[in-house]
Image (cartoon, rainbow, N blue to C red):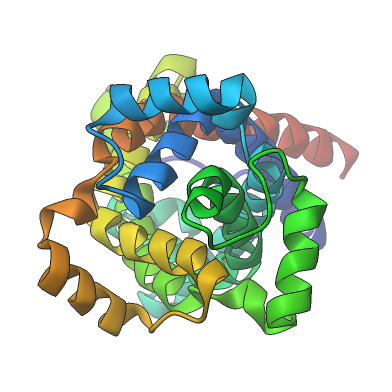
Length: 309
């Protein structure tokens, strides 16, 4: 059984988790933004594109490389904020799950316990994710929304221009369009995200080895597995969320359930899976990079904190 590491002050531990989570968020965006842009376009306008390659080529022809990286600034803010809060709360939720199940140490948590803790922590991270992700999704679909006559903004509009438009037309609460859908995606999604990551790491373990001793390759592969498990589990929910957040530029949208039922009645179930391929492809390297950056940063900062105590 692994031994308990030296204790770090809870406030210092929270700062370590925040910093490591932020580092993971940056790595995730840098490695996968163009794939995310294609995902949002295909989710919101499934009839416009024949597939991943067609959407990529059309976006490049119409908007250039900038079109593929539209929304990078809010995406960075979204991922840094989300992962900083997610991993900081993950530590607290692991402790809560430990107490709930009467375990003596966080190191005794099973993969299932870790998945439950990850699911709980997503409730809090969704609050900071929703506003920034809404801006990101709208920026990624500006070209299509302008072509449909639903906005005066162009695909070259700045992040600040999109933010000002939301404030002027919808007020501060406008940034929380799609919050219910975000919760419906994140809470089950992060159960599979952390569950897939922990189960994958367990499969890499050799006799007498702890997860903290795993190298970069097992951590990266496990992160990719966790990311793929997330999207495969909740992709239709994310499709509804993207539509609500983008199409609300043209007027207030129905809530998640009514929007979901409307899509099923008018288009069927398959359009809810438009963009799944680029999303899963993106999930493998981007979430691998996320967990690798998190684990490396967390290990370095924890080592520094332990030597300082």
